[in-house]
Length: 422
Ligand SMILES: Cc1ncc(COP(=O)(O)O)c(C=O)c1O
Image 1 (cartoon, rainbow, N blue to C red):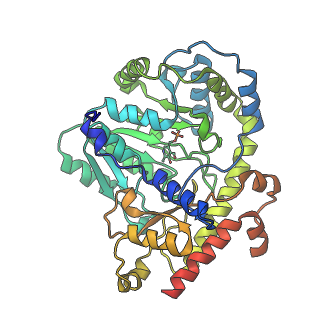
Image 2: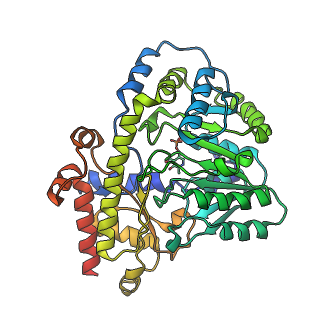
Image 3: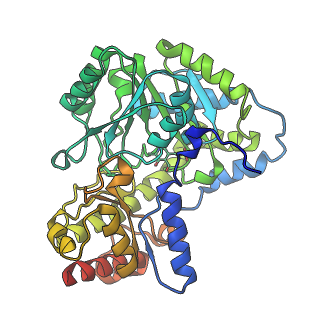
């Protein structure tokens, strides 16, 4: 049989992160040691408090309300009020199977083109494509840590004319590790208000900010037009639990109404035991806080270790201030690669995987053109359970670092060797 497939789906290619995982698996199966800097999953075990809550609620079998367990919605609103100063109540919260799904729903049920800073997370574009939406990348600059400026946003909005605009902002940022300052958000908010932009503030990496300044958000400066998303996947280290949250301000009530209708006709509600486990995470955050702070400290060390190494190799790389990513570029090696007939970022990443066994993703997966030589590096290729147990602050020597993060050290050595030999 040749079933006819929705053309919007047919045009999708395999997600870049899944594709690199397959490549790494194949190399490993062939007996190669691979440094997997291509995949960004929290390496830590789920905190005992959340695991215990899950165990205690395995008997919860009834369908929960479409919007989510009411106590959980209240706890999520309180968590965002207490920890970030946002102004939401339980009625503004919706629970979904991961924030990825909820972001897709927001894209699906709103009209208008999607603005994304370039570079941005790989999935926003394909999600928009599934809805037949036009994606408008706004190129940011390395000198500004790849953070969107008010001027860049203004020009993009201006060019779009009067049509409705949806903007996705991710802070702390995958793929760059950048973290916006509050003043930067205030300026962006002024532009959003001027053009009545609907913002999805993707805050899945909130709490993984190395300087502990708290996450700056458009929700503080432009609350009426900002939808916030988050979940258990990153700071709570429970990606596989598949629980995400979306907080929709009163001013965007039609979005909440539409979202509830879509959920009621699709996944109905998130698994009940998982929602009860999430209640422990959000409702009892003071108990979880030490885990989050300790793991954030480890992310800081691991990510900044790679930053130091990349600078030492002659790569341009803004210093990461959060999440677990870096975005170095190979501009200083452009001519050396060109001499070998390699001109695209994708081919450079392919060469690095083949010759140094280091897996990274090219800038073209993050809304940059093919000849952009930026690449995304994830800093989580280590045994999180082991490091968490042994962690006693920054390792004192390279040898100590190698004991805790062998792949980060050896992968950096392998990349350095390849670049030196060019
Ligand atoms: C930038 C960004 N947003 C959203 C998500 C989705 O997270 P989840 O669906 O696990 O909540 C991810 C996961 O990798 C991400 O990196």
